[in-house]
Length: 322
Length: 301
Image 1 (cartoon, rainbow over the protein chains, first blue to last red):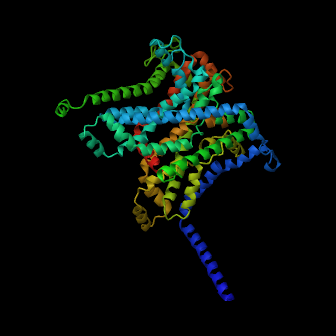
Image 2: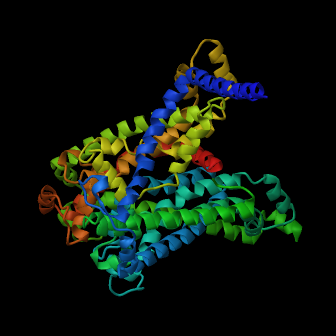
Image 3: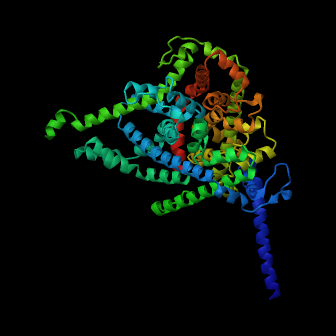
């Protein structure tokens, strides 16, 4: 009896040892694969995962230059401060407003544009317009902000010139100084920059629709408008749904470049978004703990939205994004 | 009725549809191109004349004076050098890391494969946020260094997955036969995989290069006080912000000098063109690659 358990133990140990030695054998054989991946994995650890450790700052009265164990822990104090800050709710409103507007416009316009491009028969014209429409995607937000400011300026900006020439307005409008217009300017700039680029995926999806569907509808006497409505749009519906769900997941992480570059003190009530808030009120004022609390709030909501989006995605397509 | 339609070609509604389609195309083209042409025209126009306004898409009083003036300012030359340098170095390093990682996780026999790919995929969803990242960079002593431009963003999961899905399309038999000829994984990567992955690499190289060329925030955040490490985008950003905001703490003293010689408007437009031209020259030639790369990446993710 005893010997049996012993021998069984032996075999388990042997099997484990065998497995271990097999692992190391393969490890040696695949050394180059390890060599080509592990250093970069370490890299990703340092720059992607290590910052998460910094989240501890939000729960401390963090002072730079002091050892971690000497920091004073304050619990949820900074979160309480955050949620008591009136500014926070304004910032949250701005973030949600601009991301929702961006989501809607960023979906509708590229789809319309892709459908229109698909209807162009002359290939050379189609290619030319496509190439032109990709251009703004490749220039920086710094440049785009400069261009937008110039186009909307009261001194020789084309938008004001046009509106005045058409007698729609009598006086040039100070677009960049009107808080109420800021969300629209950001959304329009975003559409201008990314419209062409975002058609790429839809055009690929449209290209995947079988030509026989169009043939059949033509035989039935369908007009082109009806073809668009009954063939093209339903054909790219799955693509639209997937992209929509992914965007919902990224709703709150809209970045801050546009707001930073297009905003100015006159419109700051409408231009501050979460990341900018963290930048100005956290980093700018040296309140690292407070700023980190904002970052944590942002990340947690993002992950939450992502999970919801993935849940919807699973239910609709029986697949998972992750 | 049917016969009539046939003889006239297409129904009337389709003709109106065509008209609408082409009108929209013209609108998009004009709305996209006009601002660039306008900026170009102003940058090539005499700066005192520009103040009068009314410049559209051609210079009224043509001159290269604006460009001469901005290039006489040292900050712009330094910015240009650093921008080119970070674009070259960042692109090469990014390509090496992404293609090596893509190669290893494309190998179904690689025993670390699942770990590596999960570890990478998670980086797309976890983010510590701006301030913890800032503290990390500071703790690593990377403030005011060139390294901060190219090292933190070295590994990008998205790029890895795009290249990987491309490698998946290469028959594994090629690797096996190379192995029979005595090649190890290292040689296979350089001699077999890389040459066959060129279209994907071209796409990723474009993304990396554009990202590096366009970056300004890292300069602003980490190297804002170091004149030797300034970048073109940061210089442009400073000039653009200097008149839109009154309370600017970042106004370069030298640039203000320049602005006294020619109008700020002309300075802005000329720098904008300098920053934009390299991209304009490169991207149309890579179009077929990046369209493919984008579609590939979308299908996979």
